[in-house]
Image (cartoon, one colour):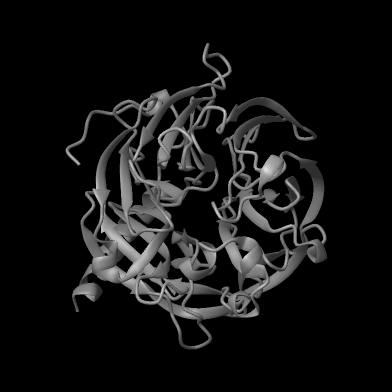
Length: 431
């Protein structure tokens, strides 16, 4: 009953915000929660990079790195700040609180969540809280996606502490870091219990989740996993449609090949989302049809036989285009989504020997790329590039503007990114 009451609480808060944010598109600046209402419409000043520690490189710990990305700055393309968490926990993803004053971040090898204050001084984030009770409260391990809700943070985990497999769930916290509720991923009706990303469409009262694999796979070397037939069976092949008001699963969609990042179209009136499957190299469209939600394969990424491994995607603010990185061939691709039923690749460029995350500015003129996937999945030797690269995009060609070599700077493996601005400075919080 406690969880039900808490679920009703978040729904009440969420619905209260829907009217106010219905006309605001969330961004990555185009891949944030729709409840993050402070968007950077002009030139961003900073890129925050959540970075995996590497033994014997710098202090060896995970850290939040701040890079100056304003071309008018004297320190353009340079590291401004690095905040270490003092341990190495497979740093992976992060997310803003709804007021965009804090970043929540965590690692896949532990149940800890780190909270950074970016509002007081956006150029110099500060670690202000470590949340260590997720395993005790939920039994979940490996927090992955941090999704802002009104006054809350919904966290999707990848694994569990019982057997370190892929069955997991979501944990809900308030913005002060207090645990509110947990929601297990469904294991009946075709559900596999796995989780990865989550994304909300408030207007349709829908939460979508995708699926990956557990600690027992993602903490192993990729080569070992690929050669292990049993391990390869332990990857998710579903997406779940949740009733946002009730926080209950209502439909399981079959999406074979491990669907990862989920992006809703930000074009007003659109009611579809898109994802890429890592193992089968496909784009899938999720949309309502005949009274239910449907998942449909709509495009192929590269040559699936060569396993290019699609990883991160970033949708344009008008929902008409999609950036996609493939890790194994180091290639960045652009797809025309004018007809989401039939995406067409119109551009590609090798942007690194290995590439993973991709973020774009609100105006679509700047694109940022990082290199690391997972510590045990990154390439070796000369192919083990670790960087943040900034590019300009004129609609026809990506032109590199700067690079930060994270190994040369003794920082580690560059993974997830978020954009920051001096204009978002706010008064100190009591959080």
